[in-house]
Length: 265
Image (cartoon, rainbow, N blue to C red):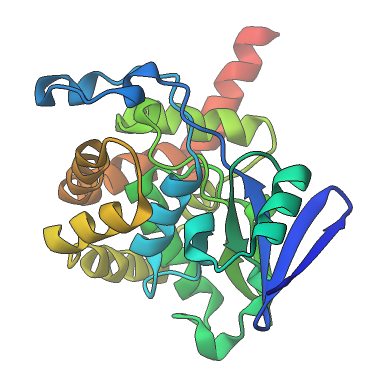
């Protein structure tokens, strides 16, 4: 049995020395999730899909041991008492899941204790899962080393196309929510290039059996769709990185800003 803490608009669950943020699990708004689809229609999922707890868990599983990311668990993974379920339902909502606090981690429990290595591997991973919201708002520093949390925008069908993903990164940048991906390429160096190559090699070791296991454990709906999303991303990762890097090299960003400024004067 754990301790439930509600303060400052957030709900935490502390158990066995671990602190979790309890987040409401929003079901996908796509009606097709209520019924099985013919395989030919898997690629036709409408663009109104929203990420939810199982999607965050899937991303967390894939990043485990590869990136400095927090663990995500579903309610079914926690040994909650009936009283705890009732209280969390009252405080959070009818369904919820758990995201480990980044401050729980220490350097010896993270894959990387070097900030630039951690950022490079996270950049490659977030391009794979199309997580554009991985900036300062969704990271915490542990002794100066970043740890990422909140992967809710990942694996969005709207961003599977690399050019639409770039548009989302650019839109977020203009609104002041700068992605780690954008920051990494805007200050690109030879060392960062080498780190990125090693990160890609690490990710491309992910086997189909691991993807299937991650999809099964995460309880995502339409598992075949998400398995295909990740597999397709792995096969195109190098090409996608090249395209995104070209879009966000500092000189190209500044050129776009100058052009936009000139046409709006």
